[in-house]
Image 1 (cartoon, rainbow, N blue to C red):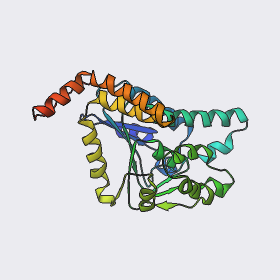
Image 2: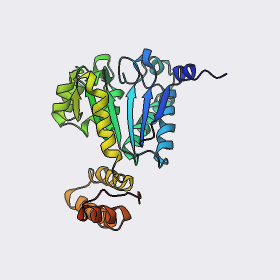
Image 3: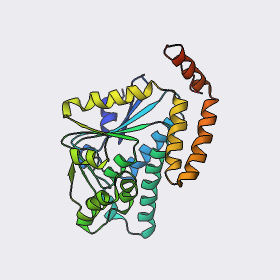
Length: 267
């Protein structure tokens, strides 16, 4: 007989769908503070690919088992590589994972606790929303061990102001959750006892929206970031026009006029 509890204990990534359109992905390397080993990143990539095609999932929550969210790359693994090609492949894998978070048609929420450092901080910055408890610490500490956090810098620099990003990157010092909130890295910081409820409030609120509208809007948001102002308005205007033609837009506007709850068809 298969021991489900034992399987979950050995799995690098746990997925739980609760039937409310919310998928929970839990990084499950608690003794290593959920360090992003290559096998863990493979598991995460596979699940994100599957979720992207899963119409039952409307929102994703990413969290970490044990005492922390994610401590970044597995340094034991990194130092075991003997070739440039192996290290290049690891960086490419991590970059693709972060891009998959951004490009996922589903909104993704990071649920932080304990520590989110280096590539773990990068993962928080890559998610669409982030909530952490008051005791969480965020850092890009690579400079302390002679390895500048160049890839975390990409996500971090697109989330917080330049001087705040450089403060974290140049000093390597950890910042607390209130500072992360002030910098714009996270959306909320709450007590540990309120963390679950706060994350679920966000997720449930988003899950009640049209998944078609969320997908179109999320894609357009990230596309316009790299455009100049005029290009962004041209692109966004066309997105709005196409969105207006969708069934869910017609239903939403009609429901608003008729003062009733819309019934989404997700198209």
